[in-house]
Amino acid sequence: MNNEPTNEPQAVIERYARRVVDDRYSLLKPDVWQTVQERQRAMLRLFARLGWHDLSTRRLTEVGCGGGGNLLELLRVGFSPEHLTGIELLPERYAQARHALPAATTIHAGDATRASIAPESQDVVLQATVFSSLLDDAFQQQLAAAMWRWVKPRGGVLWYDFTVDNPRNPDVRGVPLARVRELFPLGVLSHQRVTLAPPIARRVSRVHPSLYTVFNLLPALRTHVLCWIQKPQ
Image (spheres, rainbow, N blue to C red):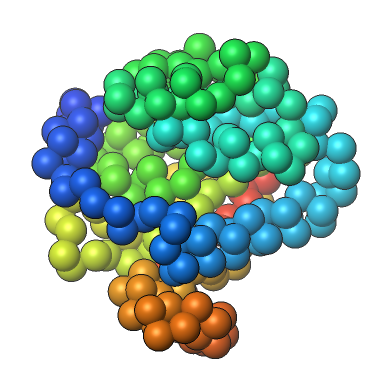
């Protein structure tokens, strides 16, 4: 495991710059909207289990908010715009998020480890497929430590990421649960496996969208985990 710090934010920018842009993740595709809806249902069940019936009072920061899609979803389920914060490294995605989200929502540009988020101020710190794009172990740990500082006692980190490597993409790597526990050693972790493996999801959904649900009944075919990592009182 590499413990020497590198300029990982700049490396991430360079890796994203060489990615092929296509419509693979368009919500118009049946495998994509089913993946998104499955994750939404799991997240809402989590909030209900926590007894969070009034989400408008909860503060949430998303690390790697992209174009603002997840924050828009959270607005729809009841979060208040002034209680949402996004952090985005890539300038073009930051601009998209700033354009899409209400003015009352704070968006920070740049390295999340340097964001001015007050300690113990957030009920939720969300990351969705960010850590799998970080190939430097020391930077992963640095970012996890920052996220943990921001979380209130009884709040938590909401984690969604894949656990297995993608052999076709050397710019990402899976983050197994053992690594999640290493990153947040003081957290109380609960998790569930979600998301039908994307290559399978794409193939079966082309035959019929309902086959996504059928194949997703097999836990071994799910490649991601949704974790709630709670900070003790």
